[in-house]
Length: 92
Image (cartoon, rainbow, N blue to C red; front, side, top):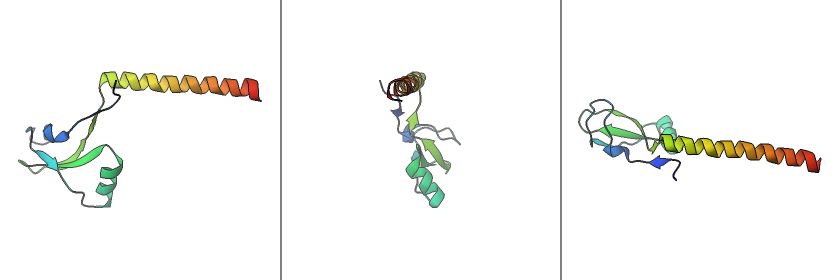
């Protein structure tokens, strides 16, 4: 099961005019936009109809993916407690 689902925002609705299929990638204009574009899940897009320019996420979190992510985090925490117990009990 996938934890995160990647999507193509080009086929999503424009945030301003709600038209579908009018978004295309936009280039970063400054250092901050380049940082956001390279190191986050948000990418820059522009609407062909209304000229809106902004960020859209490339990853979708569904309820199934959030449940799976919560299970992974819980397993990591429980494993950490078990390892901590074993180290304190048998090594120290």
